[in-house]
Figure 1: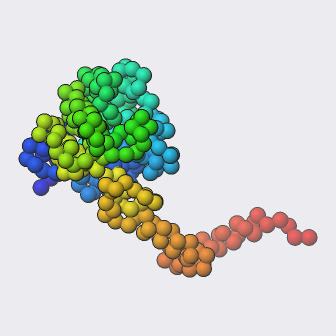
Figure 2: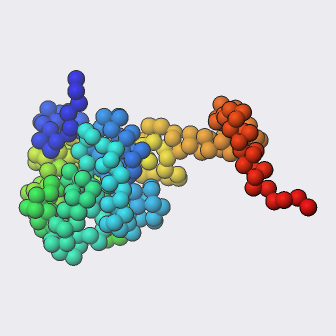
Figure 3: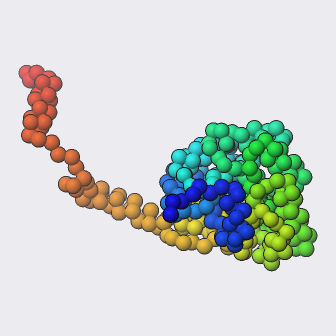
Length: 289
Ligand code: KIV
């Protein structure tokens, strides 16, 4: 069967039929190709790339231009999954006009199918409406929103107190009403998410949010490339980080022992080419006294 490109209506159908939606992050051509070949439904060019690819301390430091560069590389590697690009901190906060201009850059310069906007407060809802009105589909993101983690008291689960759980439900419904076509829910207890799910007719993509219409994980986390501790909701499906280190170490060892390059890694030339090289060298040699 030929594989169809994921569309926004298709995601709605998947939700209706109870077919789990698979979303994964990607930040460059190789990660995009892995996502394409693994036949995921949605690729998110996440601002988590700030940390896992660019080495920043948090997502707030990444610039719009850096995100656009990552998004363009991902676009080149993707044919079938829907591409959603994370709008970085600082590129929508000033006004709705700024948010629309940023969203349009992702579509026109990077080939994004949609953008993702974090938060569900009044200003964010206004941005979602403005971007959707401008014709750019929006995925919302509520629960733990890393771009504003300082205001949330750090990178911690949301919805664990009565007040926080009520705030989460209000925001999830509000982003739906504002026109988002899907919502990412990060780090919220599954019991609290389950309360909101029947009221959400848009696909709910969870990360640390228990069963939902779909799941998203960070590429480097799920492949075991991320060093050190990861969030409790991460499952490692491979040990690519260890495999990378082992491969580079084996290469370094063979270079140091003179084992690499072996005969099969070298080009060969005929006797006439070698003779011509010698003659050229003789012609260049300074006259001997
Ligand atoms: O930036 C990102 O990777 C994300 C996911 C964690 C949803 O926003």
